[in-house]
Image 1: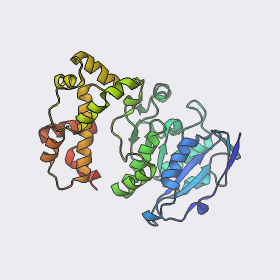
Image 2: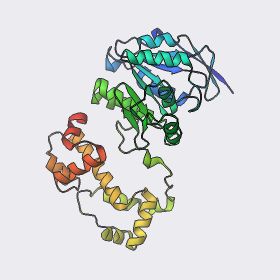
Image 3: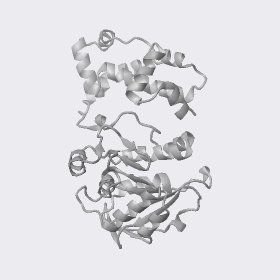
Image 4: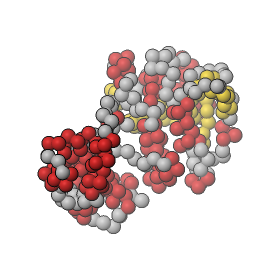
Length: 333
């Protein structure tokens, strides 16, 4: 079964006066990534006021255009729209080895020269790279594509360990869902923490995800029986993050030897006991820093099981690339 989608020109989407976001449409359009761009930047949000984003779509070639899922897309505007864009979104490209049309390359270069931001989602990074916009810069994309793109574009430093990369006027996201993370990052920078949190709530996603792509690469699927057996203990651990939790004590509570407990805990969670506790303590600390604005950093460090502010600060720097006080300043409600 096939379908047809009519993408209306910018004046038909909604009236606003904020940054003008233009998403590209092309033959072979990746509908999921395109949908992310529309959901974040194009969906009418009257609660945000008239300064919210304006959203338009630019077809890079004459239509009708085929899209993933058996859809046919019709777009009324073309590359000339990039002349007035503040932010250009390139959804996942039709193939990392697929050629990029010369008119698109020139239009992107011209927009970039005049100061427009250019953002790619997943394999859309191939378009930015082909246009030379990533030369001498850092970028990311889905871990499956990194090696091939790094070989093809050695001038770009590809990093497969992050969910997105912000190089100022070039922004790149890793896998498809990481496009949501990058779009929320852009909203946070343009309109502040509360606006990004509001959009995230509408999407029913966290406003910020820690970690990188490593957590999604070849991770073993936990055995259901292990999750069921250890589930009550894991909740018990989560409720007592401020307390010392030795492997010996936890194994005893689980009724296992220490060696068996560690093996089964890692099978159920994907992390060692120590790594899991550290991640949970960081998650809890971030939550308190965002919501408990009058609590001292020392008290938060103790409440989360770090013991001292120095220890908490060390792990924030190492894992999140920031300090607890800077995190609170950026994300505190």
